[in-house]
Length: 406
Image (cartoon, rainbow, N blue to C red):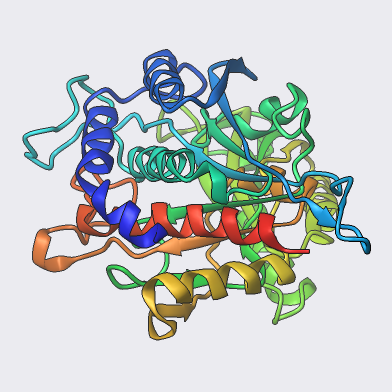
């Protein structure tokens, strides 16, 4: 019933996706998308709250609830009504689109190059399915549309603004399209536990003593210090973190100097840190600081380290992951539910999963036959739209099945 209802909405789901795709918005500033989502939900008869944590939207569908039978055949008071949440991100990227699609971005320098337009459309599709069969929804469903996933992060502000409260959310799910995981079109990928990495960053300023490049003995060369630090930082992962605990320390910027024959006064370094194990959130920053300061001191300079924690690792709840996998199998068949490997990319869905049990899964939309095989964030990124209704169906069926559970 749910699958057929979602299939009938396929044209509307694609239309929503294309409208959002043509009007991409960046970061937390998503007023056009907010208005589109709010109107669509209101037209479905769903309660809408806008401006959540900025331009976030929360829709609330109040279902029928359960009624218990008393021993004498009468009705007892119903147990507390549960609330199930589904989340979609809705911001774009500062990328100039090169797809040549008839519905390409209308705004130069902006593009939905990560599939968030599809996420919005799939969640609106699920909302429509559920609102049309409200009598089957034995509890509440929250539809959370979040800005700023690509930065600076919209999940945490929405949580602080009560997105998971009134009524309190009991479980949450979400999905991502595109080739982040090796999942074929129409397949759905799952993994229990850590699925995506933390997204920390660091900045180091190395202070030396400038001078003439022909007389280095009168100087303290911060570039040489930076080179030693860059190499030594790699030993954190290779020699101090367990080989079975994935982690990455990447120095992406080394910047210093104004001329080839001048030793500069200082050098700046910037990098990113990724890990799946939450226990590394304190260990890696400490070791970066110790290595930078120690090497700089040993080479007669100084180092100042600024470490910024980004999104935490995204960790799927085992019970919820198994539950959604079974739901998905009923929609696409068990043969199309596949196990995926973790990725060192990050996602601020992690904040929601830190608050309530949930699962984040992959919907395969990569299809070389339709030129939809470019990676996420690429200017030619596109998706196979023909499978979007499957995402809506899994969202809706998961809500119905979860709220029906005793």
